View 1 (tube, rainbow, N blue to C red):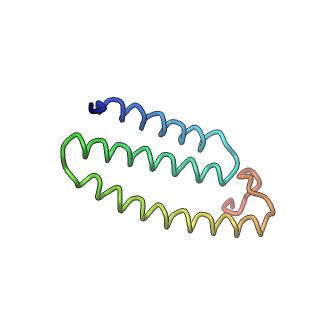
View 2: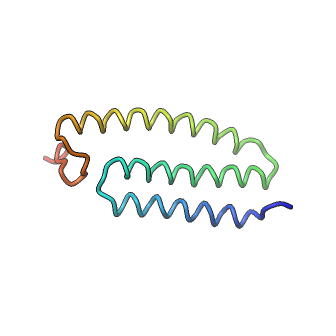
View 3: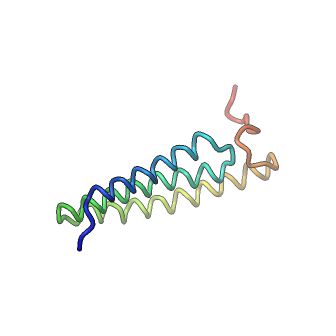
Length: 101
C-alpha cells in the first residue's frame, strides 16, 4: 500500500507552518534557529515526495546536498549564538541591538 502524495504535502505544510509560527512568535534565538530548520525540513519532505511520485532521483540528491548545507548552517549559527551570548549574556532576540544604527 502506498501513501498518496497529498498526505506528504499536508505533512510538509503543517511542518512548514509550525516553523513559520516559531520564527514569528518566539523571541529565543535558539528556537528561531530550530524553526528555520523545520521549514528547511518541510521543503525536503516535498522534494522527496515529488521525487518518489515522479520516479526520479534528482529530488533525493538535492535533499542530500541541502542537508549538508543545513549542517554547516547550524554550525555557523550556533557559533554566532555563542558569541552573542558571551557578549550580552542573553539569547533573547529583543535584547540585541547590535545591527541597529
